[in-house]
Length: 109
Image (cartoon, rainbow, N blue to C red):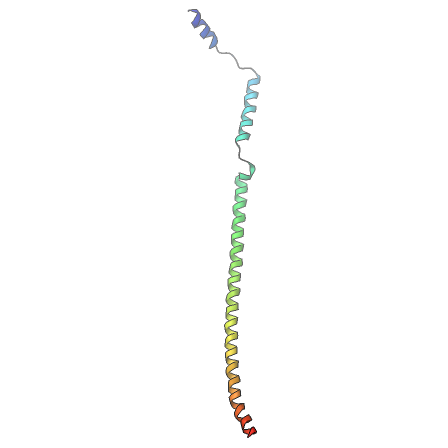
């Protein structure tokens, strides 16, 4: 073997790792994992709560919209009934006037 081969063999010779290396590697891995983790806000549990809250808001909003629609329909029906009552009242008043006016005119003669 020449000198170059001997240096190469010495450089590539297997040596046991230092005792502190495993702890250092594990600590570094833990730090890297913490960096890569998403913030807690984006966790699945929070996402489920947000989705459930949005669904609840949609349901409550839908119920309130339906209540307002029904109230508006009842108001329109009451308006129609009132208009019909006014028409009947007007007709009855005209009939009464038609009966009373001739009596009044006869009394003035």
